[in-house]
Amino acid sequence: MLELTSLKEILAYPRQIVITTHHKPDGDAIGSSLGLYNYLIQKGHHVKVITPSDYPVFLQWMPNNPEVIIYPEKSKDSDQLIAEADLIFCLDFNALSRINQLGERVRESAAKKVLIDHHLEPEDFDDYRYWSINACATAQLVYEFIVNIMEEPGLINKDVATCLYTGIMTDSGSFRFATTTPAVHYIAADLIARGAENSKIHELVYDNFSENRLRFLGYCLLNKLEVLTEFHTAMIVVSRHELQQFNITTGDTEGLVNYALTINGIRLAALIIERQDLVKLSLRSTGDFPANEICKKYFNGGGHRNAAGGQSGQSLRETVQKFKQILPEYKSLLIQ
Ligand code: 5GP
Ligand code: MN
Image: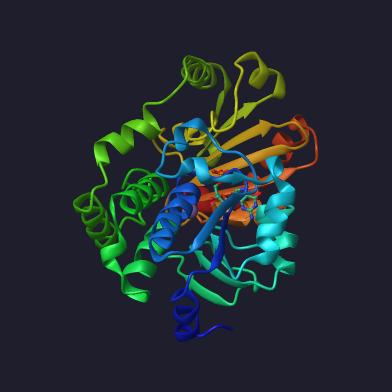
């Protein structure tokens, strides 16, 4: 374990720092990573953000995005950076398996590891932890880390504010999920005051669809949505062939599952997608229905209570069948 005073001592001098975040980074993963990056470089540190995989174009505009290293594209250089780092910040994930091959490199590194995260039950791989499941986003925790822990609110400049605002906006469902407390709005207000252009950020993330993506959305809603009224559940199942047909790329399916949840009375929404080598599930729920429990118990995954994911090595058809067979077990919770 690392005491806060020791962490502050380490950060008082220029260091070699790596920031990493989860596989298929989302707005919070990139927003919190680049937010922290833009803070640390002001303190004279040598910082690299390394992601385990690529991420969508609608997240590639944040300040200093070109500095991000995508691990599979530069694995040798990344391995060296991780091995030689003094500090590694692990953002927005709770288990090293969430960062693929990077996980072992991080585990082996002699660097001190700082976890900043809001997922349940983090694995014990860190030396210092700033963690809360009550945070709406890891970006909220990065803000609190800079302001309350490091006591450097003055270093939240426009670049930091822009990235952190993006993380909070995306992970809170544009400030609508139950995790959006008064504190979240105060933080958002402060970030806007410090230069985050909220309206522009929203546009950059959400009004950035390709034509294909919008047509794919329409196709899914019209032809692929299945409502299981008895279980207050709605699902969308997409085959590999359909992904190819619409030329769907990284990030194009993000947000799709939320549409299924907008139907009146639906408590659980599922998006089941046949990817290259496995079938991926995304679950969303309302209230206290534990979507993460289904993912953990049956699909080798996890996540938050209302937003979770997992995978299956079975065929698409078998996976869908398995999902449907699980629903009776949760019927009493689903029909509440
Ligand atoms: P999404 O459905 O957007 O892919 O993921 C929603 C949330 O579920 C993520 O923020 C993450 O916490 C969790 N999640 C998604 N896929 C996995 C997985 O394969 N394993 C684990 N442990 N969590 C996942
Ligand atoms: Mn997050």
